[in-house]
Image (cartoon, rainbow, N blue to C red; front, side, top):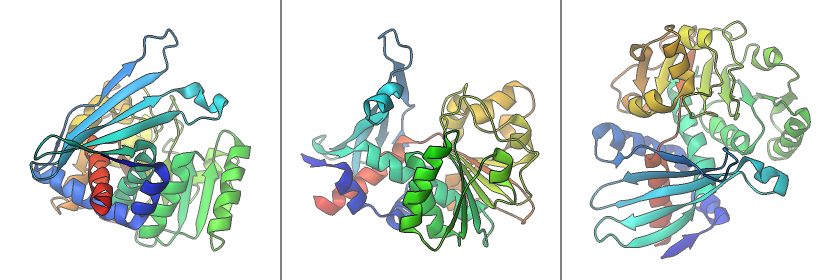
Length: 318
């Protein structure tokens, strides 16, 4: 059985490749040729009420592979200089059930989450989008910057973080990689979103912070940071004002607080979801129709994304 490390994943799966892998993944998902089960999330009975074990299984077909992403989330790990989320993707051969690979899940998650955002952005953001706003300066900020650059001509990157020092560390690192870009460490949310073309919310926030008042017409938002029914980043008024798209209807209606909270308030209903990413990939629905509408892509993350990336990586090294 192959064991593939974090660094090997990053070397084997480029950002441009990952966008294509995700396009193929959502095409297969929409066609019903791959399947997944609901994410299993358990809070560990250690008395701390915050450490999590999660299992995300998927099946890619009888001549392909199946398996699961197995991860833990320990929020206090940062104090120990350890990542808060760690795990592996277990890959099995569908023809005989034999395990074939154990692949670092952190690297796959880092790449595939951003790739899905970029795929949605390519359908939903204005073609000439040049100003990108990143909420949060953690691990997902760097991958989202890289993939958005693959699909839109970004010139200005605004970063907002509750810890301005963390934002500046991120900016300094990214400036060295992308000297052609202008980076701004925004001091307020209003400053961060003013006239922004694309916004990515990449935070673990339990309370919504992005409202309709300061969002310009034509903005596209990737709401990525939260994936539980009780947490959200976008306030109800902004969700109501926007055209909302999701990665998967069933998953969104079980896990997305960005949707479920305004629905519980009577402000929205499930019928307000315009389409899934798979429907856009297959050309079943129109995406952005004009440069005035605000669009939101609300993603909770799917097991099929992890397994399709794992398959792509394994096929390169087997």
